[in-house]
Image (cartoon, rainbow, N blue to C red; front, side, top):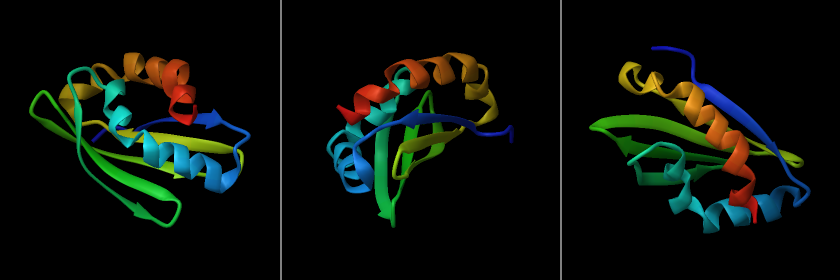
Length: 100
């Protein structure tokens, strides 16, 4: 499997504020992969672990909430890794909207 794609998104919400915003918008997390949906999610401390399904593929994903940034990571299967650049761009551009 190829390396996961990751993007850091800065914020000024603090740990609790950022976590609350992520929890509120968990359904939006799939929007970074075309045609995807979040099929399961759970918190492990300040890390949101979730699965995104798209094009018959399962993508193990995580959002690590830190005091001044979040790190979103997607472990793309080979078929979806073709879209890694586009997904990374969309994360960088639209990721901050998860914290609004």
